[in-house]
Length: 257
Ligand SMILES: Nc1ncnc2c1ncn2[C@@H]1O[C@H](COP(=O)(O)OP(=O)(O)OP(=O)(O)O)[C@@H](O)[C@H]1O
Image (cartoon, rainbow, N blue to C red):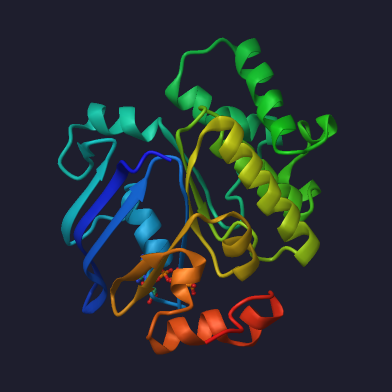
């Protein structure tokens, strides 16, 4: 894996009114890695993801992606970078009035001038890549199970062949077998498409199964980064409880120390 950060967050301050969520937060994300972002509820995992993809404007700091300073770049320069990532939100965030295929075509309509039949063929390809059957193409989100909706959201995130995939709690709400299957899918896509993955998760099994590195949010910062093994040695109450607690033991690790 090339140790070249493709995302650099520096001195980030996120604030809503008086509520400071991040203060002087730094983070590097390296090309080709799967980074798991964890932390207690309300520590600002989703806010961090949204700040990197430009949905939330930080109070201070910088976010650089592929060497472009996203908060100070021109609209054009920003859009060129935005085309190089895909985002899958927690509930899939699909348009309920559009079929799965139409949902997957949305980014292509917005960002490319591909002809309709090419868009259609590419959307069908992405839908099959995420393991949905061909008959899912013409279904509406309300006709799908939660797991299928997540897969459809993933297909849409892959619509423009991104280099970076942002995932907000991809396995939340799935049963353990469905969650494990989703982990396998993400890992397979990451390997075959050469993706860098930024994944917010609570799921210890996912961290263990697919993450190369973990970033823990605590005390308004990225408190620590490292491998799963590194996490077992961190002396912080939340980190210790999370990686050594009953759920960690149930997932088969965190028993030593
Ligand atoms: N648009 C917003 N306006 C005001 N406050 C917000 C907004 N978005 C997030 N917050 C606040 O920022 C804090 C961090 O929220 P965030 O959703 O990032 O937490 P999280 O770490 O992802 O939590 P969880 O694990 O519970 O999903 C919370 O206190 C939340 O209420």
